[in-house]
Length: 615
Figure 1 (cartoon, rainbow, N blue to C red):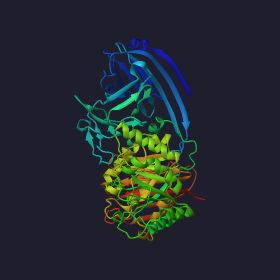
Figure 2: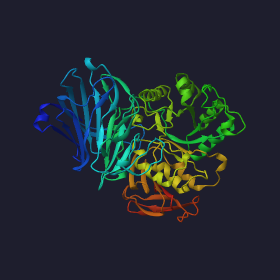
Figure 3: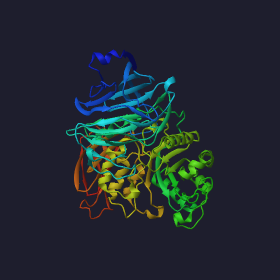
Figure 4: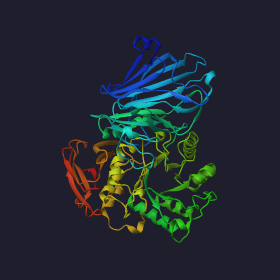
C-alpha cells in the first residue's frame, strides 16, 4: 500500500517552521525544523522521549558553497508504505517494510538556486534520512567533500565504539569517541532506549564513519571516507537511527537495514545456496578430497581453498587463473589438482570456494569470473579488499554484480562491513568486518557482537574448533552459529579431518542451519551474555554465550508451538566451574512451550539447544 500527497512551503510558516513525521504506530517521531538562516535540523523521539536532539543536516561541496543553509521550501510530499517481502535467505522468512515518509524539496534563495531534497522515513523500528540531488542544469555534477549530518544526544551516554571493522569493542562515553568510529555505533540512552547509528544502501558513494562534533561532547557526525563525485539526479546512502527498548530488540529489528535497500535484482536465484564450510589447510588434492568426505559425513556443504593455491597472494606476479601451490603457506608436501577436487566434490554434492586476494581481483576480475564458472567453482572469497573511498566502494559492488552474472557467490574479507546490499544481490552471502575467532577474542568481546556488529548484517566469524588458543569453552563455540548470523558459516577454520574422532557434540554443528525463518532474542546484556533462538522449518535452535563470570540463565521456551512436545538436545559446559573448557555435556529431554530450561554456563562458557518436534 502506497499513498502520497503534497504540501507547499506554507507548512513551515503555519507550524512555527516545523514538520512532524510519526511512524505507523506513533512510537517513533521525527521533527524537521527550518532555522532562521534557512537550514534544516532534525530531531527524533521514541515513545515521546527525546533521543536525537536538534541536529544539523547538509552537504559540504568542493570548490562550491555548501548545501546547508539559505533554503526556501518548494514542496513537502508525504507518503505511506506497507509491504511484506520474502528474502532469498535471512534471519526471517518474511520481512515487513512499513513506514511513513516525508520528502522536503529545498532550493537556495540566492543564485545559483541549487536544489536538494531531504527524504525522511519513520519506521516503528527507527528513522532514516537520505539526501537527493534532483536533476538540474545548475548542478549537473558536484564533488561532495563532507556532510554536516549530526547525531546529537541529550547526554554523555555510554556507547560501544570500535575504530576498525575488525577492531575490538570497548565501552566508552560519547565524549570519549574519537574520529573514524565504525558503524553501527550503539548508544545506551539513560533509562532507554538503545540507539544504533548506522548506514544503509552504500553502493557507489564514500563510506560513512563517525567523528566527534566540535563543541558538543554528546554528539557525533558523519565522516566520509573520501570525496564523492556525483551527477544529478543522485541519491546518497541512508543515515539510519535504529531504536529498541533493549539491545536484543535492536537485533530483532535489524531488517530495517535491508528495507532501506533496493529489491533483489537477480531474476533466478536458485543457484544461491547458503551453507557450512571447512577450510582446506594443506592445499593438496588429498586434503581437498578428505575435506569433501568430511563435509559429506558432517553435514557441511562447501570446502574452501584459501591463500596460497595460486601462489603468494601478496605478489603481483601471482596469477589466479592458474594453480600454483605455495608450499610455504601450507607446510605440506603434495600437489593440488583443483579440477579433480571440484569433480570429486560434484560427485559427492560438495561445492568449492576459492580465495583471491584483491591484487589479483583488481587486475584479473573480468577473466577470473567466467573462468571459475567454467571450472565449476561455487563462490569466491575476496581478500583484503580496499574500502572507504567512493572508488573502491563502487568497485566492490560492481564486482559482486559481475560475480552474479557468472553465478558465483561471494564472501568479502577483511575490512568491509555490510549495509544491506545482500538484499539486492544475495550472491553476496557474507563478509568479515569483525574481530573474529582467528584473532582469538575474549568472551566479553563475543558477547558484545550480537548487539553491535551483527545489527548491520552477516559476519564471517570463522569458528576455530580445535585451536588451543581459543579463550572460550567448546559449548561457547557450539552456540556461535546460532548467536551469529552468516549464510556462509565457516565452522572449522584451522581444523583437519583427521583431528576428529568421537565427538558427539558435533552433531549440533551437523544439524544447525545457516539461514532462518524466525529470530528471537531471549536474553542480552552487552558485554555480559546473550541468548538467541532461531527457527528453521519446525525446528528451533538456541545459542547462549557467556562472558567473564559463571552464570545461570533461565531459558523459557514460550516461542515453541503451544500444545506440542519437542525433544531438546542440550549441549552445555560439562564443568561450569571452568576448569575443563573442552568437555561438553549432552542431555536429551522432552519439553514444551511451558518448559523453562536453565543454562549453567562457566565463565567464558556457553550453551546450545536443538529443539525438534516429537513424533
